[in-house]
Length: 510
Image (cartoon, rainbow, N blue to C red; front, side, top):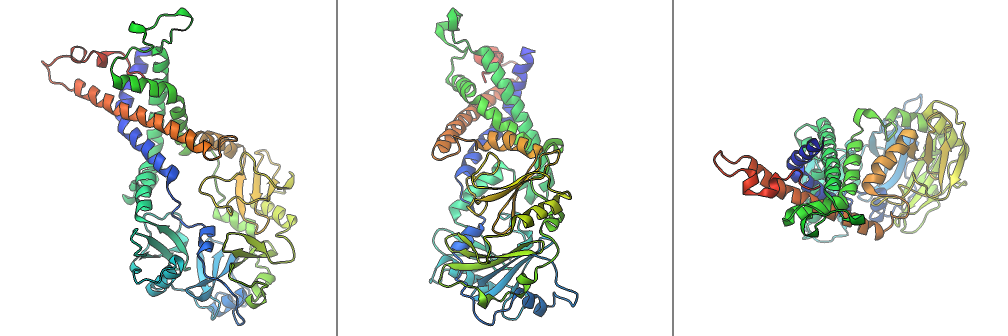
C-alpha cells in the first residue's frame, strides 16, 4: 500500500507538475486582474446626463410606434431603462426571454448603433477630445466577452491613449460592455484563459472544457493527497525522543530541490488540497449540486407577464429629477406592481415613486410564482450580510445591496431567496445543495469566510499559500524532469540508483 502511494504521487506529480505551475501562476493573476466587463455602476460613472425633456415618448408609446404593440396589448417587458446614447434618448428594454433591444424615445425606432455613433459613445465615455479614437471592427462574439449574446454584435473601438485602451460597445443598445488596456487584457489571457482553459472554446470544445478541468482537478487532488500522506510518513521531527534521520535531519533528503519540495508540501499541502478539491467540485460532477441561477422560464414566472399601466404610460418629462447626477431612469416590476428608480453617477439609486420600493406582498408573491408553491416560511428585511449573502471582491454595491428581502420558501430543501427591495431583482437563491456548494467551493477556493475575508488580511493569506503552491509545483517540475531523464536512459548507462541515489529513494517527499 505504501509503495502504491509513492508511485501515484511520483508519476501523478510528473504528469501534472507543469500544469500546476501554470494553475497557481494564473490564479495569482486572476486575484489581482481588473474587472474588464463593465458593471452597471461602472457604466453609470461614465454615462451621459439624462436631463429628460418634454416630448419624449413613454415606454408604451415607444413600443406602439415601433410596431411591437398590437391592439391586444404589448409584449412582456421585464425591465426598461431610459438613458442617453450618443446624445439621443433611448429606452433600453429586456423582454421575458432575456432579449435586449433599444428603442428611440423620440420616434420609437429600433436603435442601430453605427461605427460613427460608437466613436461618439467612446469619446464621451473616455472624455477624450483628441483624434486618436479609431473604429476597429464589428464582432459578433468577441472571445474576451462572455455571457453577452443578448447584446451582440459589438463595435470595437481603440482609444488611442498610449495604453492600448479598447472598448466593446453593443451595436444593439449602445452600452459600453467591456473596457480594457493592453496590460489588463494580457492579465486576462494569462489568468482566466490559462486557469479555466478558455482557449478550448476557440476550438469549439466549450462543452468538453468543463470535463477536462474536472478530470485534471481530480488527478491533482489525488496527487496532492498522496503527497501529503507520503510527507507525513517521511517526517521524523524527533519528538518525545524518537529517532530522526542521519545528522539530525527530520526528512531523508539532502538535495535542495527535494528539501524545498518536502517543506512546501508539508506546510502548504493542506491548502493546496482544498484548492484542488474545490476546483474539482466546481465542475459539479454528476450534477450533485442544484443549478446556481434560475432558468429564463423561472425568471419569467418570477417577474410576471403583465406590464403595469403605470410603467407604460409614464412620461419622462414628469420625472422630478434635475442636475447632472441622474444618468438613468429605470422601470422595474413584479406582477402588477411597478417602481421607478433613478440611478446617479456615483452609483446610488433612489426610488421616485411614493413608496420606498416594491411592497413585501409583491416580493413574496413573485417568489411563490417562481417556486410554483405558496411561501410558507418567514420573510424579513435583512439589514446585515450573512454567510451566504455577502459582498465579494470584484462585486459592486449594486450586486449585493442592503437592506435585502430574505424570503424562506419553507420547503423540504429549505430554499431561500434574496430580493432587492428597490427594484425586485432576484439576487441569490440558496437551498441545502447550494449552501453545501458555498462551503465546499467558495470557502475552500476563495477563502471568503468570516474574519478572514477583509483586506489586506485576505491578501496576505492568499499570497502566502499561493507562494507555497508555486514552490511546490516548480520543484515538482524540476524533480519530474530528473525522474524522466533517469527513466529513459539508454541501456548500458548507469542505473538511476547509481547515477543519483536520491531519485531511487521510495517517494519524493510531498
